[in-house]
Length: 400
Ligand code: HGY
Ligand code: MN
Ligand code: MN
Image (cartoon, rainbow, N blue to C red; front, side):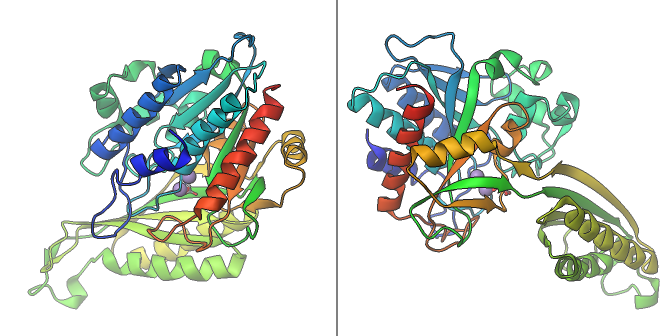
């Protein structure tokens, strides 16, 4: 199957028929369908397929004559999505990986190293709350015990859901054997902004980014019988926190987003007892992010106190600025005969794997510049240019 056929096969999986984007949460039916698609594509190509102890999928192509023990070149991305996400974020990298290897095989290229296709679990952190959970576990950059305890919106733990899907929750964690087989990782991804004006670009860095949970605990009560002066309504300090997020981000040249909130009990005629809100903070440098989050936390704390509400702020994940491997980046640009080089404001598994091995990223132009929303897009010609570029890079890196 070529790029277009593979793309068409995945496209309807997990898409909201009303046009509201994709919902492919880890180990829910649509994402499981994407996993099944991955395994089928790997098997029809005769790849060695495995699911690691953390739920990541890796399929290896051992070309005839290749040194099976040599460190391989891994490419790929992720199959899960944010709620209401676009079609390209993640799957474009996985489909392009299979299509790029197909090009090499059709052209009789025989790399001396293995080439692998990876699909990392829970990259968006949309179900269990920590982004790049699968690659963090693989590289040992999250405590397995903490990962086991992460819960989804229904209160189900990662451990329980992983066990339900055939993993041993007690075995999750770093896997030096798998990491030892990967010489470098090259992830192709749809560009998630407007910076790329050519079909294909190369990443220079990933900006610092993190997630914080704000828990406002107040006093639930009746909306119609509780005097204003008697209220301890957590919604008020929450509202102030949202405004403070925008103001602090502007003040520090950073980005701050509150896109997820959970109100308990959530009745129209009940003053909430609790509001949980998540802050996504990013910025050009760590200091800008840290100052932004500190200001927001302070404003939220003052507001909570003024309303007799308690506040707890917890950092759920943080990734410092990732300077992708310069030598690998330059080699990729050279293999492509030159390409625009640009930073990204989005986090990626490449940024997590970078702590353990050389990683690079290719971007495919996104004419809408929108991502994490249904209008995320890449033109077919640009997607095919991305496949061609990835094939060129894989051939160069794997000694074809
Ligand atoms: O949130 C991000 O930046 C990425 O899309 N997971
Ligand atoms: Mn994403
Ligand atoms: Mn992504």
